[in-house]
Image 1 (cartoon, rainbow over the protein chains, first blue to last red):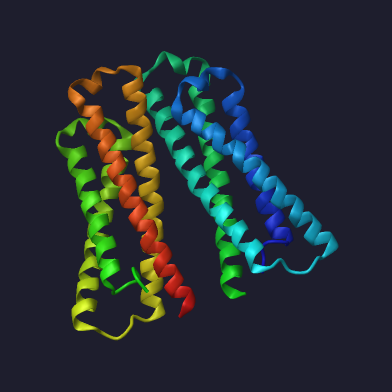
Image 2 (cartoon, rainbow over the protein chains, first blue to last red):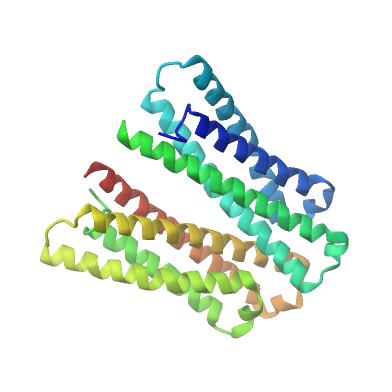
Length: 149
Length: 149
């Protein structure tokens, strides 16, 4: 099935997650002003967890596509599903928190938003949201696979 | 199994969801100051959706416990699982957004927080978070039942 662990589809999903998470992290960390805001620190922490997780699974997918190893046991698949699921919940929470604080800062005309800083933070929150969407797709596809084995 | 659709456990989960959602909604709506903040309006909207959903399913559980009707077909169970799942994602997003904005308002010493208004909003966000936890439990238990039938 397209998109389950060890296929080209899964590799594309993992690369997408990594790219959006890296984009979000870079946009947040271009200067250190995010440091005073809990929601932005939370987003940076979660994106810092999503990147190594998705990269590791992308590497596993590359190996599966080229070396065709035996199908992973349900135990390994369960760990992948639970990991994906926890990270997807955390990235949803982080992106929504960052988006709402940025929206509030933009609406209140805070001096923090000088020089398009808040627009950059909005793009970072949007990028984290897209990363969440792809993580959710991976979770659902692998859960489907787990239910059927 | 304890907590799946049509049992006493499920009824308790549904009542818990309703009580926490009502508490969150009441704490938010005691005055109309929330109206100017997107995150708070989002929380009120989502809690307004969770209450009728959980109440309806609580009524269905009461009927099931006393009248013992035949087991619902997988189609109905799927609708319940998808509805629970969508509402749980939305309530997680809403509670995190409201919590982060309240935290920001408290930290910045905004005039909006005069008279323990922000503490009340924090409790409302926490209440919505507990409602999310119970919704998530219902989703997972019913998904398990759906996978096994």
